[in-house]
Picture 1 (cartoon, rainbow, N blue to C red):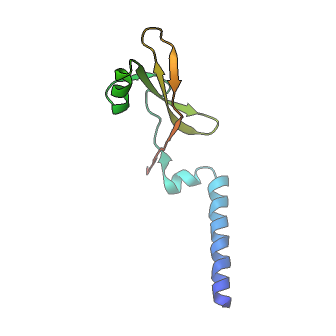
Picture 2: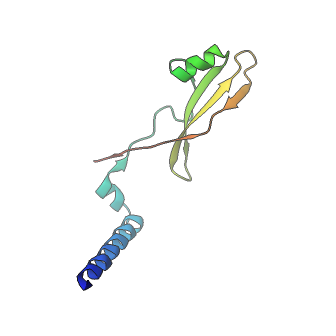
Picture 3: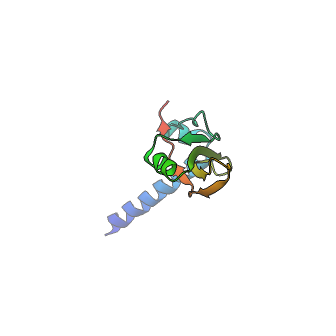
Length: 108
């Protein structure tokens, strides 16, 4: 029973050490896990979506579907935003909830 307790204490200490090192040593996370892939080239630019299923459905409703990727610098997160416009008045009719885009880590 003592050895199980000793093993658990050792694992907890190892986990705390790794988390401490990854968060305080500059470059440790990138060296061990890789760097995050770069942002898309068209980040922040609204694009007309006519090819996807949702874009075709919006067109049948008489709307234009616009999509963009937006990067929140404070949180370091990338989201996809979608809005629907009336093509005649250019008024935004509705928007969809932001969807987080998962960025992968690339080994260098």
